[in-house]
Image 1 (tube, rainbow, N blue to C red):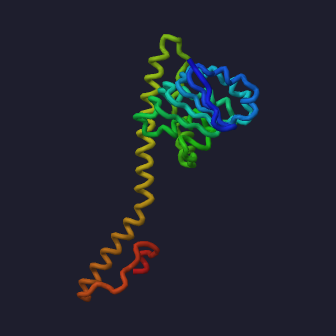
Image 2: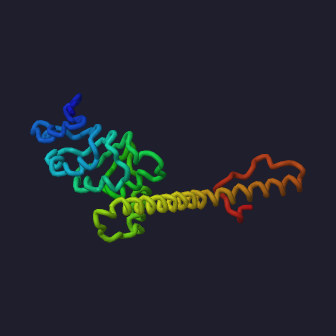
Image 3: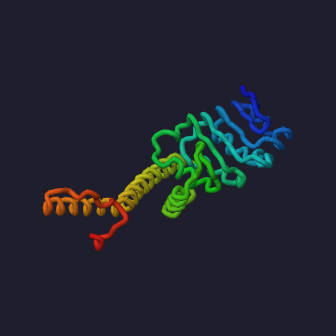
Length: 213
């Protein structure tokens, strides 16, 4: 069974087998956002041509579509006007550290994911992952499951590498402040030892150099 729900003129919700709504001109000319509920992702991947008839469609929401890997979103890359996607209650939403970055790998045209704007560093990481991704040769149908497991493993390793890289970047960005604070503490200790009284106006934690001491 399937049905269609339209609470706003520019929004369309399709449940189950209600995909016939994609053929209606009145929807194609007005709808900018479609919500797919309980429609399998492999079914939706075959509907790109019909979705292309929606001239102003720029947002898609996926709810309970059995999306297990970001790579399953690749067919939607053909939709150049697609700028926003939201994914809810799908297996891919759980256990992935870098879901947004992995989505960007397959849909670089996106500007917003799950209600939040895409950030520049996320685009950089997505580009980096694509450059590092191992190009697997075309596999026969019997090896599809095996290749998906390999891809998930590669994704996991890349996610861990990117997470570690971010931590290093954060540590590097705060290193200078840590050094300043350490110098400040030593300076205070030395002045206290010399005079027996801590300085009335302590040195700021930033904005000075060793020469200022």
